[in-house]
Image (cartoon, rainbow over all chains, first blue to last red; front, side, top):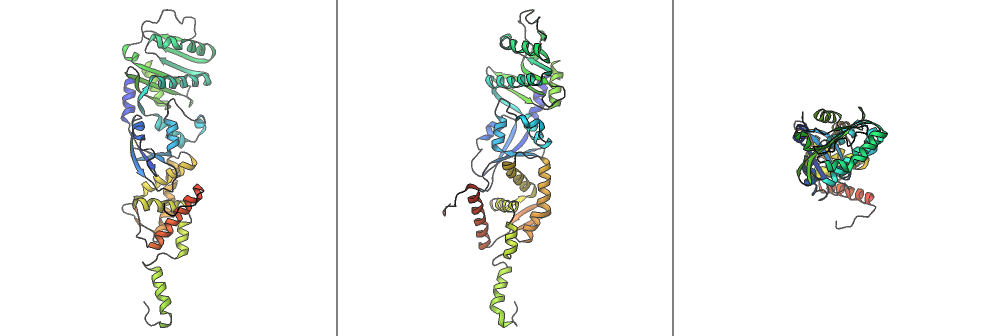
Length: 235
Length: 140
């Protein structure tokens, strides 16, 4: 199990999204949704329906429907998951989880940073569990070092950081976190932030690899199974 | 045709036109068919598409509702399909507004007379006017 095989598996599960709109609303959506590994079809609906909506089908089965505006809010990085989702009913959650588990092709560095911050924030709020974070450079780690030191020191979150060669020895010896500096080259290719809240629905993971200097492909997910697989891949 | 009944020939001709292909269903039945939002939506969809499978119709009605009441999942979908199969589609078929082909699960708009088409169009315009709070303009 590697992070690469997780990305490949998720990419293979392509869902079909049908955009229903009374006019051309959402016709420029195809590109956005294609980057999330969704195939898009457009259909016209009668003009008495004021608002466009989207139906998601997976393997020929209806999985969910939501208004186009809800979908756009959801797809905008960083993770814009409604906070009340945790208490929402199972069907509602299932739809968002379905869309969660889609690969994004082009996120730039800024968007990935924002998504990473969201997961770190989640760890702060939860105050327990495991947070495993992989950096692709020493500089990237140093920019966040204080945050992880504080998180490890002031919460019950078990923090592990994976830093490539070149991190100064003893850099974090005084902080109650685990620093892995013997990261192999396969793992060092990925930007990952994994949070396991201990079986609670706050668990989530971001795994991405660089496609060029400023662009990444990867997945973020709230699926507990996928989060568990990502932990297995790095430990 | 009842040729022996001379005294009522004019009336019976009208009545013959009335429940034959000439005009359409009796007003009570027609208005009953339109007295339900889901049935009006079905008719609006079929006016656009002419033929649609029950699954597709269910997709559209569930999605349409989701624009008001938030995201819907497979449970809502199953409920909607049951409602269509057992209530709305049979009623529309009995009224003669749609044809339902059980072997293909497809629903088709029946060929409707001009007065019925006019009524459906007015119903749509009225509904849109109520939703937007604007009186319909004569030309659009």
